[in-house]
Length: 144
Image 1 (cartoon, one colour):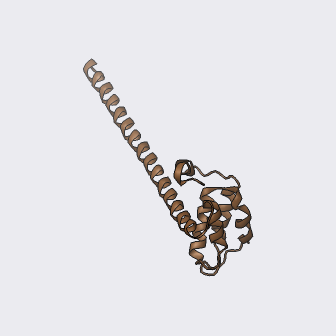
Image 2 (image 1 turned 45 degrees about the horizontal axis):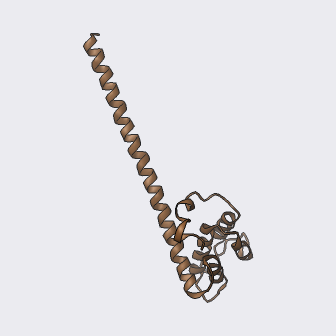
Image 3 (image 1 turned 120 degrees about the vertical axis):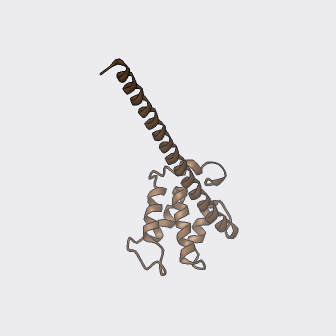
């Protein structure tokens, strides 16, 4: 092998490494952007459900969402969305309300509150990790 072919091979290898590094950096960037986007969508959903509850019930978001869950005048769907939002907020004040409805036996979704959502919400209100909430929970979308 000549010196010139060795030099060409080294340059080609370095070029491939740079290309691979760029592709990896772009992939990581896209994953981070997707994560942030999903987190912001979740935050917007919590804000939407909380705003609905606050229009009907006084107090802060957690208190209003708890009142919405307690109200049988609301649909099961709306009450389940409030359970989800409380879980995302992760406020321990909601534990008593959530535990009141948790039986561990999954009912027909049209007849009862989602035991799956209740279980997740209870875990989050007890301090389970919710990485995405760190993105949106601060500021105007937070608990207050």
